[in-house]
Every structure is written in C-alpha cells, then in structure tokens.
Image 1 (cartoon, rainbow, N blue to C red):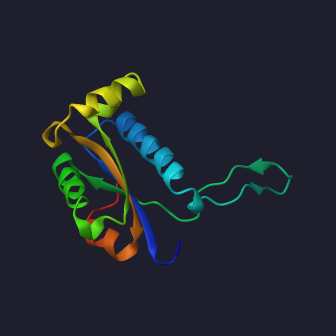
Image 2 (image 1 turned 60 degrees about the vertical axis):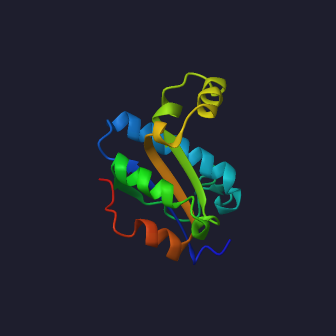
Length: 140
C-alpha cells in the first residue's frame, strides 16, 4: 500500500449522542484493522523499555455527516468507479443487535431503505476519497 497516495477517513452522524459516536468509531476502526492489517505499524517501546502495541501508520480524520449524507456517500461507493476502495459501514440495524448471529439474520432480510448508517469508513486512493468527502468538516 502506497501510504503517500492513500487516505482513510471515517464519517460519523454528528447528531448522535457521544456514546454512539464513540461506539461506531470503535467498530469501524476494529473492522478496518482487520481488513487492512498492512497499515498497522509495529509495536514500539518507550524510554523505560515498556511495550506499546502498534497503531495505524497514518491519521484517520473523523468527519461530520448526517444520516442522509452518509447514506448518499454509501450509495455512491457501490458504483464501479469506487469498487477498489475499502468500505466499512455501521448501521442502526447492526447497533441494535445483541449478537452477531442476530445481526447476520436481520441483515439478510434488510433492504437498502432499511439501513440508516451511524457511520462509514473509507480507505483507498486519496483522490477518490477526497472526491467523496473533501467538502465534509471535521467532527469536533
């Protein structure tokens, strides 16, 4: 992966309570780490020799969206031009499930109109990611 020409962002629904925003970001980040292990650096040690586990090698801006904007971007990500991007989405359907089995069962019956996204993460070519997200503000 060419880290100079790659970008990774998360877009979260800014209208959500802080706890749901944090939960969505955590879920997206864990899944990104699984999908893109090559962007996670090596463990490091501090001056005292204590080990600190590896983290991602580049920043991941958290951008502000609303449910309509996130859904619109998610829909665009199904277009062939964006098929090479890594995309993780987290919906209210997923957030409301107590087990992974429940999630997979409900997802099988979910139509596109049934999913309201709490957030999405996008990684890939910087130009493509910017084309989708360049006009979004940072979540503060």
